[in-house]
Image (cartoon, rainbow, N blue to C red):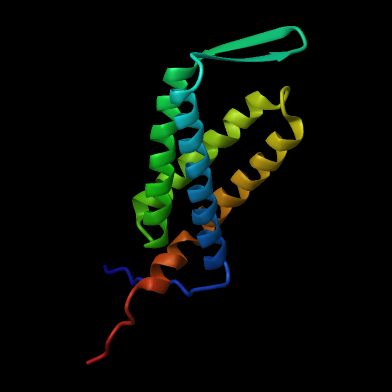
Length: 144
């Protein structure tokens, strides 16, 4: 028994997948800059909220953000080409970002909610319409 592969039609949502890639690039640049600032700045970073004090080692945090920034930028560039691995990594990174923002709601509630909404939109665009981007960039089939 053979299975017929139905070609995926391209819709306007491919623009949203590109939007997700651009947001991933911007996020990667910001993460990389945060990492560089942490590596060249003071040795500790602290955040005081009512009743809580968070203290972080800035160097370890800086290296983590720098690596994450590079990963985000590479993932976004590969997402534009329609690579399957980039769609998977993009969804994982956006999901991770949403979870991290949940932890930051007490410190920055509005920003966290906005970023979570953007992450959900990115995840939806990549999952529901990522295959269309790949189909749009594939050469049309030739009939001999």
